[in-house]
Length: 99
Length: 282
Image 1 (cartoon, helix red, strand yellow):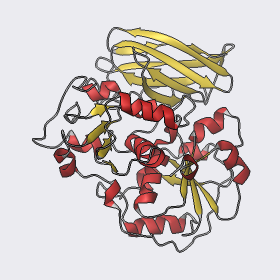
Image 2 (cartoon, chains in turn brown, cyan; image 1 turned 90 degrees about the vertical axis):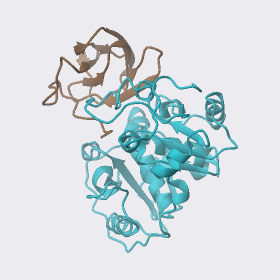
Image 3 (spheres, chains in turn yellow, blue; image 1 turned 135 degrees about the vertical axis):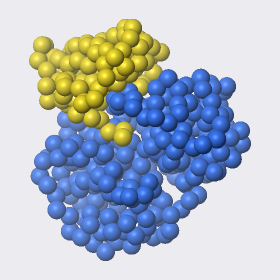
């Protein structure tokens, strides 16, 4: 299904981190979590790949693949982005500060 | 058709909330979005359970569509404004279904929930209990805007096949959008001769549609041939509805179909050709 799943930190049951490449983290403004931010995953060429809404605790999560990714957040508190270089499956985390 | 016949702005919508004869419908896959706050007066529609048949894989029938709109308080003469999350993917799917069953007075809120929220416009958790109507769909399903699998196979090398998924889904690197687990079992790749124009290129960062000039340039540069018939597809038909709105409604191409079976059907068919990689026309 194409809707945004629950963006809580816990991974869905059955997620196999030896196979899945999960990108996750928190959107923050001045150190405080930002819920309801629009978090966009851009591939190595800057092309849009996916978008989720951060949870009340500011968390986001994507299922992707190894490569270079940019996580860009838009919010009422401002925008910001972080770059992840992902070399293999597993949980890869990045905080995105917006201002 | 001009842009004003297809879209309303957030400003217009805010001024027209609660206006007699205008019904706002929020269309999401996950209705938690609506429950957490929606446009004042808007009624929720669940894409998963209300716009598809609950048993067969198909859109709702004409009778089911009529029952749905009756229950949602939509009259045959009402203007319907559709909006939702996910950059209006599911609202665009609903828009396509409304046109399919002949409800002509329907528009999309440009930017959907995202622009509305980023603008800081009012949201409410007050639940709306629609007053039921007796809605009758104006016509049988208009299959001039809906493609089925056999005509998709016949369209290889003949029509514009526009694959609106992300480049990694198109090439076969991944099977589903990156916010979803990659558990599907069908074959990856794309329909031979398809051009890859991700739906997202048609939208601004805030979820609004790009200008007509930008959209014309985008498709032209990607190898879209304006004098040919077109079929758009994605994974389950909702992102391609977004592109159908662009090509058929905003840019006014006359023969554009949405293939709602999309990759989850095509990529599971026995014996059809599949192409991997970036594609010949990319």
